[in-house]
Structure formats: C-alpha cells, structure tokens
Length: 221
Image (tube, rainbow, N blue to C red; front, side, top):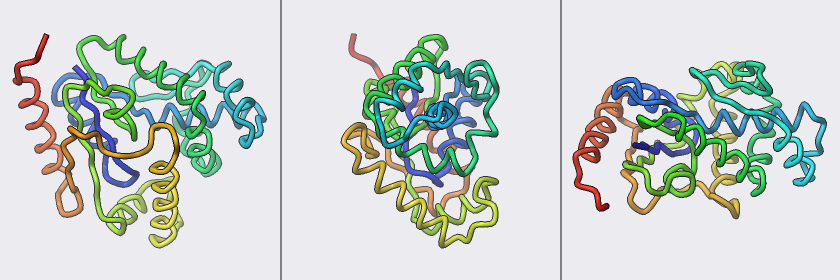
C-alpha cells in the first residue's frame, strides 16, 4: 500500500506525510532528502554540476540510504548536511538530470519494497512517475505567500526575508514544473488539497480520511 503525497515546497508535505504514516503504522520516505543526498554526493566528488555525465557517475558510485528518518550517504548520517545552502542550491540542477532521477527512483522503489506493509512517500513526482499505481495520490498546494511564511520557520531559511524565500520557492517551482522529465504536477486522479487556510490537524484529518476510504475501495485484480 503506497500513499503518494506530492506538492511544491512549503505546503507541509513532510509533516503531513510523517503524521499520516505514524497514524496508520506505515513506513515514511522523504524522497526530497534522497535527491539532496544525491546533490551532496556530486558536490563531495567535485563533479561539475553543468556536466550531467560527471554528476551521474558521482551519484551512481554513492550509496544513499534512508533509515528511521535519517539520510545516510556511504554509511554516514548526512541528515543535517543536506539542508545546507550549497546542497539546496544544487538539488534542483542535480534532480533535473534524467540519469540521476533513474538511479534515485530505483532506490526509492526498492526502499518501498523493503517496507512491505506499505509506506507514505512524499515528493514531487511520486503519484505521476515513481508510484503511478499508488493506492492514494494527494497533491498539496497553498498560496505563495503562505508557503513562504511557513518556510521562513525552517532552520535552513533562517535569516532570510519572507520575500526572498517566496522568490526562491517560485524559482524552484518553475524549475520543477518545466523540466522535461518528471515535472511537478498533480496526477490526473490525485486529491488536490489547498492547505492555505487549513490547520495542520485539518489537513492530516482530510488525508487520513482519504487513506481510509481508498483502503476500503474494491480493487480490480
């Protein structure tokens, strides 16, 4: 059982996905963290980020793992390091390389197979590419100014003005939604939830209700 939760930055994907997974006893995978780890692998190798082949070689040579909420790169916990400004800046460029996405998506699918009871997987292309047959697909959205205000509370955005954060989010949105491979968009059958004027508890309750309804649906064999 896979629950796919997608959406742009600042909509609350990670918090909602973690809480839903915990409430239903499912595994939780933050796919954005795996792409950040791939970006860190490229940076540590010294690869030129403008050379897709070099970046792909660096990522292919690395071992990226996600365990108990921690991100491991070649066995080292890099959960804090992947939130640095340098990794944040490199992530979109690295994640836009088709060969890199193929490597990381394979890892994500393998992780879910290893969590056989099911998982809540959050990212930007889970319902459209990684798990197009997910039991439930949810796409969270929010108004730009709301997303920026929320992101301002994250430690990686500390010291940045809300206007700067909003501009950075919009730039990331454009990059993610216009890339040739796996663009950011809701799946045709996704439940779209505008979280702008909802509390966190209200969003979680709506997603949990959708999970339970989807789980009770008769499925074709």
